[in-house]
Image (cartoon, rainbow, N blue to C red):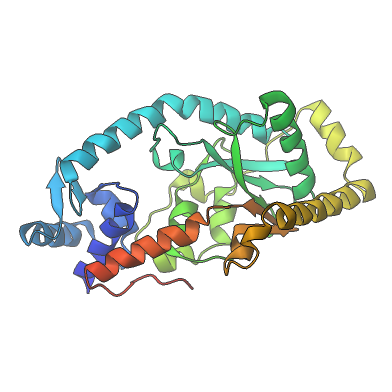
Length: 304
């Protein structure tokens, strides 16, 4: 039912204690629907005491408190946005980095006191692990390995950009990525992941995100470094760094080796790199599923 689909959008963000505005409910609704239809359905849900409304925001419960919390988090995100953009552009200036996006909390203009600034990095195909190595060295030696404002949680090749794990969680994270520059390549990323529309059929891609921007120009020193590592030396180093990452993950996180989502949490392949020890993806989907069951709703957007 369309009403259930509208409610499911609110329930998904209820996992994050995040009330939604009308246009956001339309965007994140898993079924094709218009704003007038959504508004009518929301009025019914509020009347039936299924949802609460406060100042145009909708939530399952405690709406007024959640709205106050959301506005505080938005203010904190706004205060950190310039720093996030500057750090993202710094990452983008490194060798073999093709594009950088803000991801996670700040990409949705939500920052709690404990939140990190997360970055989604797109790197040159065949040199993803070399780019990760350069950035890791900078993070360790220049930043003391601090991740508070420099958390690079996902690396993706700029050629093979299709994301394997397809779910409402991944779709939301994908469409809300924020390019740190006009050469952000988000158009190419979305083109290779058109499946997101199976989960978010109403989401309207911004015109600047649908364009196929040119790669960022690098300074002379970075260009020279890229030339040095373009041939066989770079290919060998890239492979060695990837192998070391696999070994390190197996050794450091051996207690998670039997987890059914191990490959999802620790991916070290030529076109992708990530380490998500908390298995945030699965936890969010499980919490979402429990909310749907509590409201007797069949999951409208199962994992593909």
